[in-house]
Image (cartoon, rainbow, N blue to C red; front, side):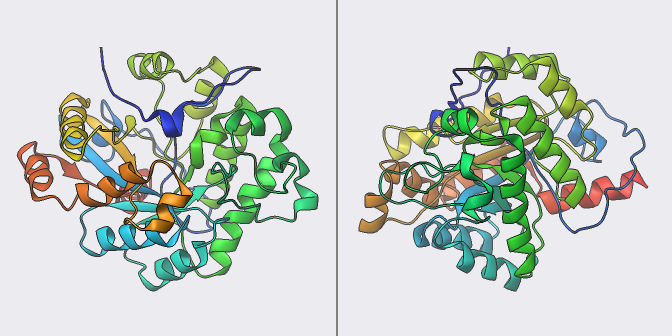
Length: 339
């Protein structure tokens, strides 16, 4: 059985009504219709996309870009040095304009959108991109996005969710950005089966793929159920009909009591990964006093801003013979194989 540590901060989603959350999902860009796909051959999505058989193919992905200046600095440093493969911007957040402009100026970097329907911190908060009058179910009494996924689920319709995620994508595109993928902050777009349907539909219509996990593998589906993600048949069927490429697995950099502990847990995670295409997310930020006022997870984020420039980590990944890819590369492969 696969044993993987999933970050509780970002995927512990408790619904008081029904099935809530699984993971994340998305890949490439442009406003054209998706290619009509033929059956792709291979035992997993890495093989279907033409990667060598039996390899662990990995995307190291920085989340929460645009949330604050500290996150932008950390992600840009990684991307400029090609030490990670991908990142995603939270469009409603205070420093998203800076991040989007940087993405426009650096079209060779793999940058997507971290579609955001929650505003979780105590004092550092944000509202929707769309007109608040059009999405009242997404707003708390302060006029900000809800702090938790269950609050979104209990108040927002799928129509409001769709309106807001389209507004976030449209804003980035209007600024000249071509998002390489889309995914979901705190897993909110997996809060209900109806949200999942909206998410997959929008990804296909914009041809900006989601980082969807292939849940046809029962071992993988059961893993995420055991990890606390209730996955029903409706969600599985929705994802099975999704027309863009999928991930074989998904995880996040584990927490650690110390930097050394965190690094060792990351090494264990890599060793335990199944073969195939996996995305691992993390949330890097440089250390400042301001960051400490935003989130009590600041220490983990600071360590994650160091982890992938650490020479011992770089050597470990090389010794493990990891193959790296990006959402841009995935979509190029998918399009070339789907013609």
